[in-house]
Image 1 (tube, rainbow over the protein chains, first blue to last red):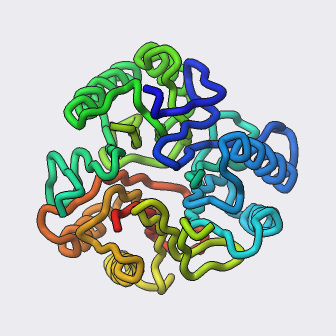
Image 2: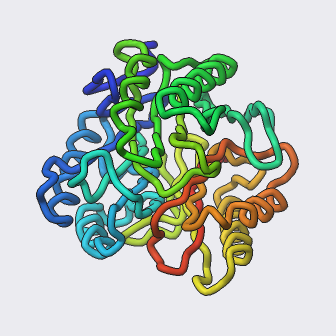
Image 3: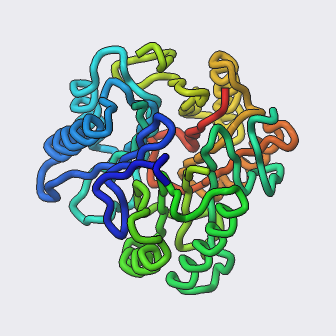
Length: 116
Length: 116
Length: 116
């Protein structure tokens, strides 16, 4: 099993898994009550820390899936996203509006794969 | 093409594909009329069989995406999920509520990547 | 960074990223006003071109996630999808109905991983 690395493993999920040079992680906002810009910025800051701890980084994203609960937040999310990404490093990206995320106040969730 | 293995291939999908040490598969419940616990347990049992047939296993999941049709089912799904997962082996996991799955009675669907 | 290849990179996304023999890409329909068959066919035609430019192809798909905005389009999407896929090459596939995609007229979006 030593070929799979995991961090922050609970009975439900791991903060990340790493295998064969690719790290898989999902991040959500730390504060359900915050507005969409704050939720997105804080989520991406957490993601950045997590990627760094896995030996990857926001300049090494391969694929990102953004789940929004309101497509009216699209421009705000994009503004934060584009300011956060280093130039020339954007991953493939899907962005869809779902009905709800696990916590009722979450407005955004991101799942990524990144190269280590 | 021998570097990609597939099983259960129909004109629409394969039960799994395998490439470069990673298996990709999607599972749905076998019984549309069952309650959420039964649907989840049966879906995960099918996934377990599928992963084993690919030379992987539920202790080698890297990423899981859970699609629910009602977030009110969240606790029930988690209870079955956590009982099913071996200790210390949880993958990265996203869980979102979508509007509908392909069959009207499906309450849950799972897409995973796992190490072989 | 030379171990990650990207094409069509904007500040928001790349048309594809490629790492370790796997290409990641997302496609949307070019014409928001078209019907579901036309949107799906045009999206898959774009995907085919993109995959070819990455040294992959529609016969080398590993995983596909189809996001629909109306499950009533399921049969139409499947008809186009199955006619487009070469025999024996179907990937693992998830298909879910979301609330909305980024452009209001998009009826379908696809995210894939494929072997190079």
